[in-house]
Length: 88
Figure 1 (cartoon, helix red, strand yellow):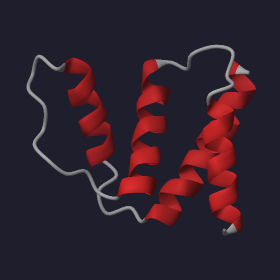
Figure 2 (cartoon, rainbow, N blue to C red; figure 1 turned 135 degrees about the vertical axis):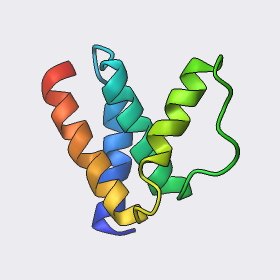
Figure 3 (spheres, rainbow, N blue to C red; figure 1 turned 90 degrees about the vertical axis):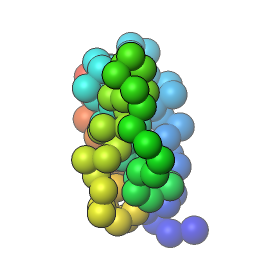
Figure 4 (spheres, one colour; figure 1 turned 45 degrees about the vertical axis):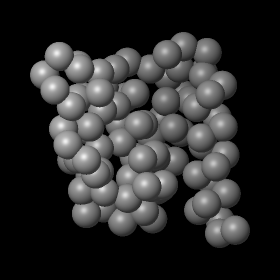
């Protein structure tokens, strides 16, 4: 397992331990970077207009289209480190 993968896995565990819920924008960033790192580019149709949460998640992930998994993992780890300072 690479050092980055270990950091990514540790960050994924750390985010579950935050004592306060991050704001919606940070939650969308977390989701998008995690999905891009683990699944690659977004697939499927964009959810309908009344599926607000699903549509926001889809759009956040779609913004990262073309980002390789290494860059997405690095961004995720960096974001979790910032959130730990604000929400731990």
